[in-house]
Length: 79
Image 1 (tube, rainbow, N blue to C red):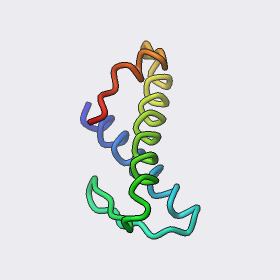
Image 2: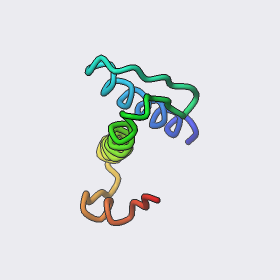
Image 3: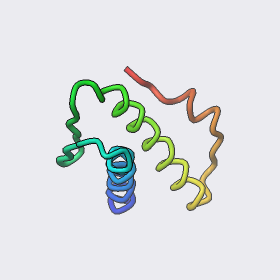
Image 4: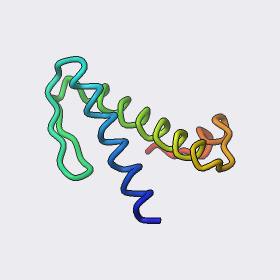
């Protein structure tokens, strides 16, 4: 359902922003994009991947959907 997708999207954004707020680092979020100073690009990328995996893992477990962490990572495509 669209509500589930909206929730997952907002949960990922919340997790990403929290990483930067907890460190006192500036981050600008708008819609589903983020801006950080160039020196923090790797940190943003890492936060985005972690948020993606953690949010989907939590959703799948909560809804009792089949989930295997190793298989999940194998199916993730990172360009």
